[in-house]
Length: 140
Image (cartoon, rainbow, N blue to C red; front, side, top):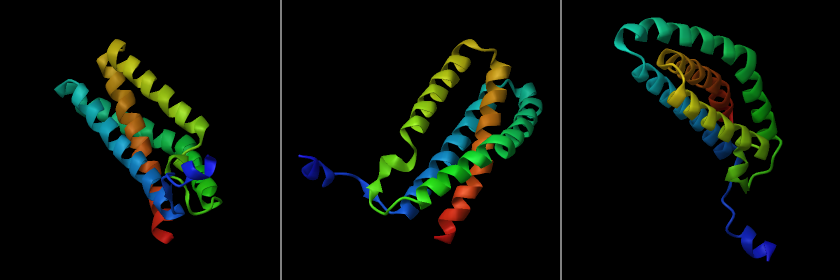
């Protein structure tokens, strides 16, 4: 039975896994930044947008760069043909779901300025750290 199901597994090369990981980080980062900036009132956009970029730069350098490097190493150690869903570990997929839920709760119940700032910060951090995955994808 397992052999029959393996035939339908969406396997991909390591290069494709890196492309998908980089695209996810970049697209989600851009979407969060746009959503955060549009959620801020016009007079707050510049101030909170800049504060978000500053906070996002710190988050990128202190946290997400390390996470990106760890994911790159993990993917490079895998074999071609691995399931495309394995672009992230099961633990990471769970963390992603928790972050989505937390972001939705913040957006629904938190102050608009705080939610906008957090969205911009996390979006910028993802965009900035995605550079490491894109660089690795380009070299393969």
